[in-house]
Length: 298
Image 1 (cartoon, rainbow, N blue to C red):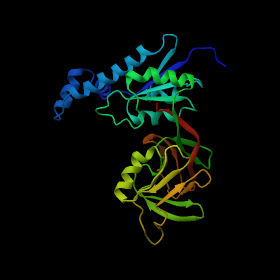
Image 2: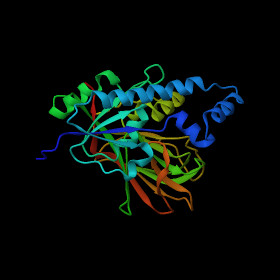
Image 3: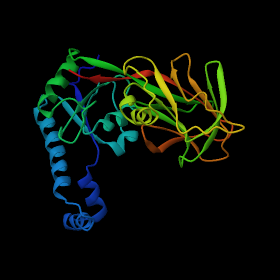
């Protein structure tokens, strides 16, 4: 057992204001850019200051003996998380999805810096209570939800994890051709691709699909299950639409075999830049992952 004091890794993403400064170099140039498009810099700066103040409050209220580290979202694929780390994700709910696939059981405290603009489905803790939640996580007294994640595994052995959903289809979201198998059933499909959503993801992309299709499916975020939804399936002489939605379990995955000559991809949680290639004949199986996200909720 380690004798080192606890380490908290504060995870953030670049704010809109920081991205504007990176693009336009100065505050005045950023202000002019927004103003020329009928927008104001003030609200962008306010959100930036709320984020900075939240981070400062978390840092200032942690016990002095604790170690601290920080990581930007853009650095997560290069950051080394230690088994005993605790994660303070300061920002929108999507930030927790971004960091989840790099963790293996470390507790995550989602901190909402601006409740007026951030829903806080996952980022539920205010900056004022962040130290309290992290201290409870350090002693094992925190209430933790084991959120189900989704895993895509290619027949080449490559894998990809997601907290919200896995997308399988063409990189341009144009028509994708593939063979879909679910349990004993299979068919050839042409569609805009499919997503396999966890219960956590059911409040995001999957929710918009259910709203558009009027096909409501209940799924629990901590149960080892997922739901697949085929997007805009097209019936033809060679393709069918019978398998448009289904429940996925660890023993009954949904399997897709690509019939695309090029452009087939698998990506996670909306990050299209981080993808696996799905060339013609490649098969991917998507199911609930063995790994879960340990989300501190109280």
